[in-house]
Image (cartoon, rainbow, N blue to C red; front, side, top):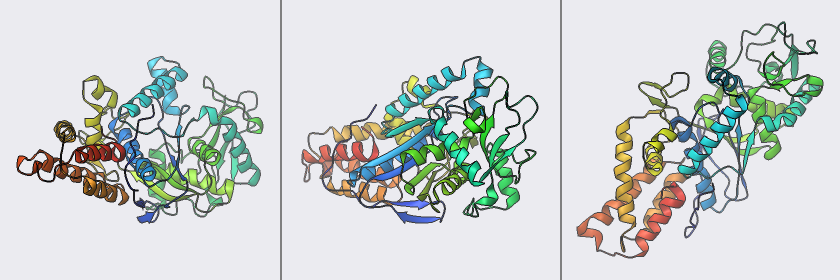
Length: 420
């Protein structure tokens, strides 16, 4: 499902990205392989526009890096074993593995329809369990993790081996760049899947590394950890450590992952590698709302990419809805945005199919400059709109018209914005 990406004349610029940790723009490298980890989906429901917003944003980065002559080692996980997946499988009466496989396939088709360049390594949590076991065992051995007694009935034939938690006090840098009081962090931790009130933990923010066997739930051999399954944060740690050099260039995902997920994943990497700053830049995409609330499965206010496709909407128009927003901001989707995108796409295609049109090297420079400035897609879209307006305006359409103009404009939009 790899989209064809045309080569453009010249070379793209150095990319500046907003770093969530320092709250400022930081340059990425100009040469060599770009190494990036972006957190993937938990496959218990179809892809909504919030997911698409995140993965289209990082697709822009991949395209801009490649346009600048860099190879890209892009790694993304699939959390195909987690509480929400098991809960949804039980609710629907579907085997959890079948549910995960079905939703992963749908996600990949949605991404292909949106012409998102797939990661080089697309890795499932289940496939990574041996790496997780090694990582958690190492953290136990070093004293960076500890065991917590199990509730009755847990632990299979080794109930004396408790659940394993990371010890936040062992990492002075843990969540140091996350704003808020300790009480606010604890509340956010609970809201986003943590268990601050778990009896036996040393600190409320300590994160689960290995969950021992629970009745009726899937389990794997954890060696000296005992049977069980991995915690959420450590799966990303294990995948990143295996597929990327540490430190790597960009750690990304939605802004709801900055804490606790990314804070803990990077903390685990520090403890396992000794590298103080595992990622040079932390990049987070904004949340997409609908009907006045953040789009989420729990609220049920989802606008699904697959449903838009089934309704006959061109995926390129859906992509243009996303490109009209800056990736970093929170925004709310309304159906009229799709109407606007459909009209925009028609005009772009009309102008770029002309036999001759305005020279487009200036357009290429503008789009490159916009993307180099923290992936400013709205400015890039505005530049294309201006070129299209000139191309379709009779008074100017014949001035300096060339067959190379529409061809270069089409290649620019295809290669850098992913719209064809």
